[in-house]
Length: 368
Image (cartoon, rainbow, N blue to C red; front, side, top):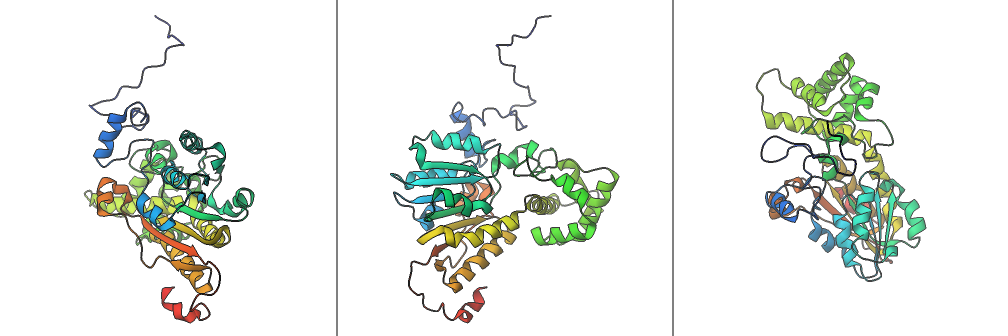
């Protein structure tokens, strides 16, 4: 028997059919620099190449943030670096970008991509942390404040598509859901710590789940019999709990599963508390006239952003806020279906002086 050559790379795993289905098998999609034609084909089909992410509403974000050469910008959710790339280009020459992200797996890859763009080394600073630490980071990087703050609260496609992260029920994987797999407890361990009433309340608050109690009881009963440690196991328990029929509406059950996964992910990563901390810090981090844009993907996030911006307008911290939600164009939604639930809001910090009506907050009561 011939011994394997240690200098020769191992053969790739074979897969059935014409196209690979597993995340790891999609090696061409994960190497865009080597397979540009394959990447173009995937994009043309309205899909996101494995291991990458398509930034949403780039044009709209640049319009509301109005970046200029020399500005100091913060991308609070660096992700794949799509929005950061556009901001970096717009604030050159002499502009600076700080990128924050808690994901230790994706952050080094994104930093390498940004630095390969050829901008001065000191124009980019990257920190592995969530955006609750914004004030602390800017105390070091920009103590006088910044002109631009951006936060895209959506889950990156790299995280959704990688089954080892446990965020999606489309492929089986460990029930983890941590943005930073090195810290905190997984979704599976969270289930072990919860009582039925607590889980039901979590589902109601984090995802507006109408069948929260029934689903919570089914999940914890099943988890007590045999720990739910995979995404497929959890999805099956959820589907079984919302129907007693062998045949059920696939789309309806998938919506229920999606809401439950969302609720657990929010709890695992303490997302609402982190967002509340960010919203409190933003005014002190912006220079007068500075702008913030936040993109949300579900009602719980959007309610918090809407309330904080409107309260800031009443209190005189903001001179202007978005009057309506900004949504992706129909063309973008067709080209990238993952953009369909995105909602964008912005605010502009007060430039100084007084703003008519601020002394009479009752005028704004209908906004809250």
